[in-house]
Image 1 (cartoon, protein in one colour):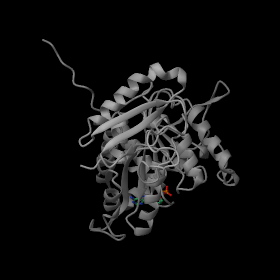
Image 2: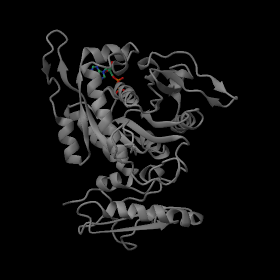
Image 3: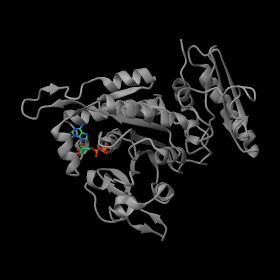
Image 4: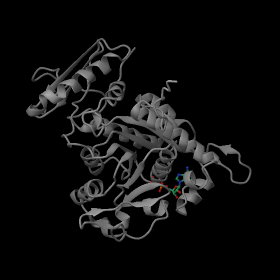
Length: 378
Ligand code: ADP
């Protein structure tokens, strides 16, 4: 059975590198994963020389997890303090081996992800208008409905839509002169550049300013304890998005696409982008999959159907599910009353909840909200 890089990254996402629960792939310390034709898996973990002792158990655990994957013949994991020579493999001068489509040098270590935040998950799309923000918002609510503590960070600096989607206005409170208190709606903590500046002001910002605003919204906001922080990424796969994916300590990414061919080409670029920076793809979502007629309730595939599922299979990434194009989703999103929160028993909320459950499973290997069984001794 052929092993894929994503299989390896998924196995490694159960390995944590600190008490805060930062996963190995999310820590920025992982080199590209190399799988040779004999199904031997090789990668390394970037450390500071002083961390060698602390990381030896992590190295062993990572090795064990990958070795347990069906089909893996052997695993070589090294600790390395030397960036660039992280991947065991080709001799100097030999052609660079790649760990799958678009693999690139490891992300620089970002230190401890975010204290108190277990997972940061990016919701991205290859282009604008596919419903990325609507999906991010309703997914965050669906994760919250499963009993998880959830935040929503709007990193779409040029087109922030979280304030509108959650029906929020006003400015966040500043605590002790330097930290922002997140806004709250429907049980979510939320932060957006839209709360802080006039909508037009950010339009003239250049890349570094955008990155610095996002870093501040990550680090200088009192997120508190969160199981997951959902990040609504800026649309597209250009340099700005790549820098952001690299600079944010992500546990994984979700790609939203519509079923049309053109959108799927962009989705493919999204997958490649995250692979380049060693962020595991948690799955692809097909939005606006079928149109549900508001009068008769009949479903029609006006944009075609099943394209994203097919594409996900081709790219060997998980498929998380299909969200129909419905009047209820559009109206509730645009009115700041997201459907998962305002019609939790309706059919749309069910779709988002199912996707959220799969997403959480891919992230942690566990069903959401289910506590470990308690053994009662009588
Ligand atoms: P993006 O973030 O990709 O630019 P948005 O989330 O802002 O996209 O969505 C664009 C428009 O499409 C919004 O008016 C939104 O209400 C609508 N929309 C998104 N997903 C759906 C859906 N599944 N059904 C109906 N309308 C949707």
